[in-house]
Length: 450
Image 1 (cartoon, rainbow, N blue to C red):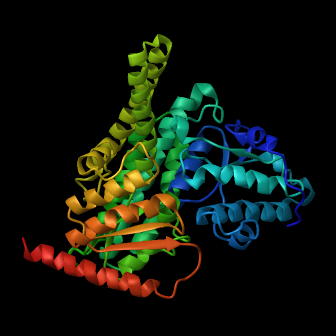
Image 2 (tube, rainbow, N blue to C red; image 1 turned 90 degrees about the vertical axis):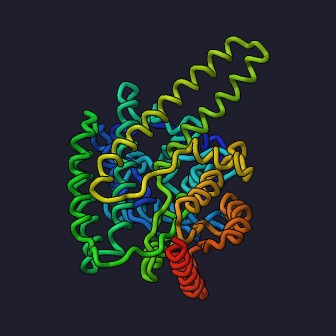
C-alpha cells in the first residue's frame, strides 16, 4: 500500500469515537468467532449493516505497518482491516467509498496497550490515500462500553442488554464445545454442531433481540445444548481439567494462539477458558468500585454536588452489573441440568480472593486482576493445570505469571506460560506435552487421595 505523511493529532479526536452506525457498513474484527457473529446479528437487528471481517489473512500487512513493539493483537487487527479494505476496493472498483464504513475497535483504560490500538490504527489509515475518511467507532471501558452515540439513544439500553445476551450465549456455546469435544463419539461431531449453532443462534438474535425475547433465544440454545449432550460417549473417563487465563484477545483468537485449546485436547485435556462476559462484568464492577471511592472521598469533604454525582454512578453501574449477572445466572441455571457446563466467576468474589490472599489489587487494574484471582479459583475448584495465554511482552500477563508462579509451585499445580507473537516456537509442542503429562499426574494424585 502507498503511504503518505502522517496526520496531525486532530484526527484522533475527530475520527475515533462513538459515531452513529446507521446507514454505514459496520466492520467488526473477529476475536471470538462465535461471539462476533452473534454480536453482528444484534447490530443487524437494530438496523446496522454489521459485517464480521475475515481474520489473519492480512497478517503480512499488519506487520508492514507496525514495528514489532506493539502487542500481537494490534498487528493482527491492523492487518485485518487493511486486508478487508484492499479486498473491498478490488471488488467495488470506482464505487468504493471509505466513508461508507465504520471500523469497530473498542478500547480500555489503564496501562494496557489495547487502549491505544484505535489511535494507532487511525494514524495508519490516515497515512494511506483515500482511507482518511473511514471512521473508527469506539466504545470504552471507562463507561462500561455504553453504546450511546453509536446506537440511537432511545434504543441504546435495549441494544446493550441484547449485546450482553449475545456474549453470554457465545460463552455458553464455547463452553459446550470444550465440554463435549474431548468426549465425542466420532471425531468432528462437536465442531459440526457448533458451526451449525453459530448460524442458528445468529438467526435467533437477528429475529428476537430487538424485542428482547431472550426466553425464545434460550429455547434455541437449550435445544443445541441437548444435542451436544447426545454426541458424548459416556464410556470415556473424565480427563484432566485445564483452566486458561490471560489476555482476552489472545486466549480467545484461535489463529493467534495457534489453536491452543485443540492442542491441549490432543494431549488429553478438557479445557475451560475464561469468558468474555467476565470482562464485561469486570468493567461495570470496576466503574462501580471507583464511584464508591469517589463518594467516600467527597462525603469527607462535604461536596454535595459530587456526592450526588457519584451516588448516581453507583446506582447506574450497580444496576448494570446486577442485570448482567442475573441474565448469566438464569441462562446457566436453565442449561446445567442438561449438561454440567462450568459457570462464570463472580467479579466481586475475585476481588475478595485477591484481598484475602493479599496478592494484587483492583486499584492496579488490567486483566491481571481477573487472571490471578481466576487461577486461585481454578485451584480451589480442583483443576489439574493452568495455562496463561498472552501476547509477547504483555505487561498484565507478565505480572500474573510473576505473582502466581510461586503459589502454583508450592501447590504442585502444573502451570504453563504461552506468550504468542505469530511465530512457531520450536519447543512449544514439547512444553505442552510435558505440561499435560504433569496434569495427568496431578489428576491421578487427586483421585488417589480421595
